[in-house]
Image (cartoon, rainbow, N blue to C red; front, side):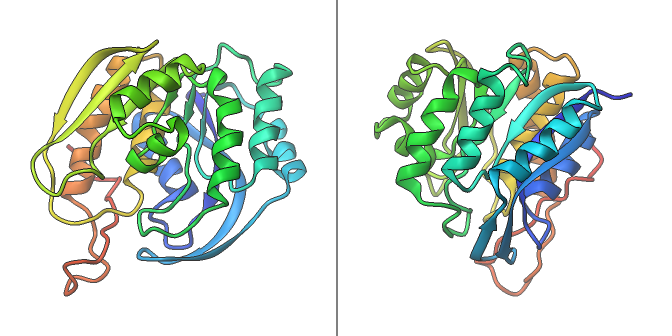
Length: 264
């Protein structure tokens, strides 16, 4: 069958982010998405109202059922929600339940695009640092990069996360500037190896970070090198955002939902 990406992610009822974004993005990458659901959120495309995390034992049982059954070629984690869930995933790597040679894309979700909390930030940051040595690629937004690294300068922060164990860090400037192109920098083992420039489109997008990280994970599962996976994801995500759905077309401030099924 197609290569499988096992995703640890939460349910977003709006379908804009979370596990639905993972399924759609990975499907478009050519791979198959399997899901270990980490939480059920209460949110719209515009706002997070709350969430209830799944017990770590339940998430682990979901994951091991997939690992015992399907040819998992990559791992992707998004919203984990609790330190127990992060510790459980760390243990799966440490105990080699997940093969340490399996590419792992870590999207260290702390907040939603709308600003809603998806867990206690300070405790999540500390726990996420334990996962860094297993990460092939970490894809934080600017807020998450600064929180994890303790550095305001994004490039210094990326180098610090590599020094703390992450193999590679994707620096994204999409949250930092109101105008001009979006610049992304890929650091591997502390060295900047690739820069990409994407057009800054009008509006805010719900689930763009989930989609980008999941597409990269899918391409890694398909056998792409990290730089190639990132370039393919850049092209794909730009098209999904250009064709995004507008749930509230009369509100220019409302978040848009990426159209992950657009053909380009």
